[in-house]
Amino acid sequence: MKLLIIILKQEHLLDQVSSILLEVGLYGSTVLDGENIETLADSPMPLFSSFKSLFGEDYSYNRTIISPVENNESIQDFLNICAHEGIDLSDPEIGVLLTVPCLIYTGENSNEL
Image (tube, helix red, strand yellow):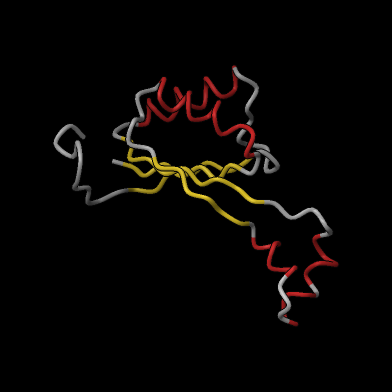
């Protein structure tokens, strides 16, 4: 069992990525709203105000998708379809994908996984 984590920097791709997750059978996915650390540059706190000059004016939000995954094949299927659809998750401007081992999983559908 693994936990799939996708940090999608291009929010306009969320519907397409969600459809691909469903296509490969990853129904237990959750989407979270996120904010890049660079947005703290707009904070009135002096520590963060200097970041604005480092990162420029283009601050962004992201979507984080998490999903329990039983096998590597589902992840590879997801990546293959993304590549076919022109979504390159190896491009840091698009997003980041990673998996981490999940040692304990209880909850809905835990018997199936």
